[in-house]
Length: 235
Image 1: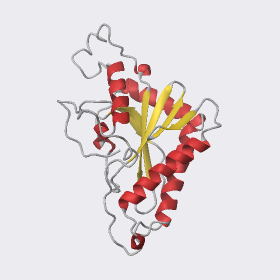
Image 2 (image 1 turned 45 degrees about the vertical axis):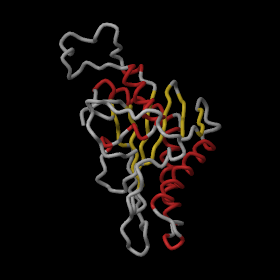
Image 3 (image 1 turned 90 degrees about the vertical axis):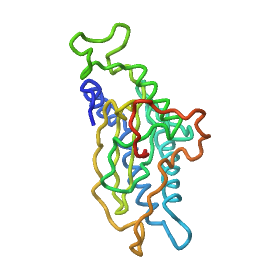
Image 4 (image 1 turned 30 degrees about the vertical axis):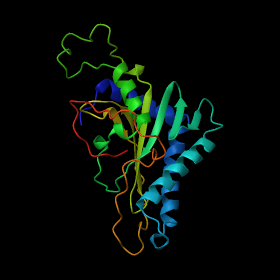
């Protein structure tokens, strides 16, 4: 996956800023707590499956995050059919990765799974026009097109729960086109795995691609970049 250097540098600053503001640290702890708690109470014999596990975890994360971030200075968190956190002039949405495979790649996300997330990626793409690696690089920014990544206002946090209880999370600037991100970073890995999804040793069933937006109305228009690759659906 090719990332934009300027966007990557900005993302590093955002990670520091949002961690210092207690947003990322809160979300990261909640992801781990919610996933492990739901694994512990997941019972196939009572009819639980990957769908109930994923949906429960997504709703728990949203509700708890709204509650815990309510009194954090400068932060606005709400349930907008998916978790939405506003801080320092940017808006973050979250999404649970459908795959439980440790080999899942963050470049496989498909923003068209969700109208909310597609709109964020679309807005970033319309706002920021990098020239690095393009034919315009020798001559600089295209007149009238912003080449400063600070104009991007939309962030996305994709998180993944693994059958052994560990979790992973990525933060980045979503985009449309050949690449799913202008820049993305793996946040601190949770290495405290214990136990598994199925006590009887049964292999976990891969869940649907997007638990957070199962309650959303269908997309009004089936939108996909004409030149973009067909990606495995994820976050």
